[in-house]
Length: 283
Image (cartoon, rainbow, N blue to C red):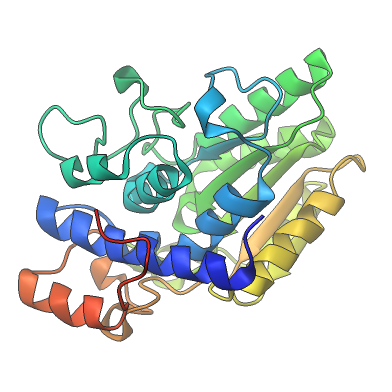
């Protein structure tokens, strides 16, 4: 287990990775990746029962994570590499031709840690429910986690899946929503208001908790630990993670501008100056 300070250091390094990867590739999705870095680091290093060296597609005997908004691969790949799923040096191949680190996760490339090709939004909860039911059938007491963008919740399949999970008491499932109120075309309110998400999930027979500051490492740790304590009680659990898109770089925060656009070299250096180098080292 890492201390909160150690996790904060890893998250800062992950943010450096995200910016350098996307600028080098001249494409990618840095905004949501920066905003969820604290969550991914806390999950990969402290909260999930996983062993990267023993990764299997079936996930027997360990927790499983499915990231439904697959466009945030910069944070997915960085945290996986830093956790030991594959060499950190491989991050320099992000989005290059022939790489295992595709712009959206690909199962065709046999990358350890990736169990789902995602990016077509709305599908991850359905996949997570299937995995959770599979664990129930085999007597595996480990948990299944899913991560979703808030704009993704405008997809109808999410609510079909949510209805099923509540009705069938899939209580070994924790779905986290990155609730940053931003999507590629503007704010979620501008594009299609999500209304009261807490009330909506509760109406579908879920237990819902909110992490007020999804960029405060201790709040993330405490909130996800609470979510884990609520599993096994007859209801799936939803976590509303109140994060800031672009967190860590002042000119990238709370705007959808960098949802799917990247920094040039000059702005990259300005951004990295706000994220001092760590002892972990850049790739």
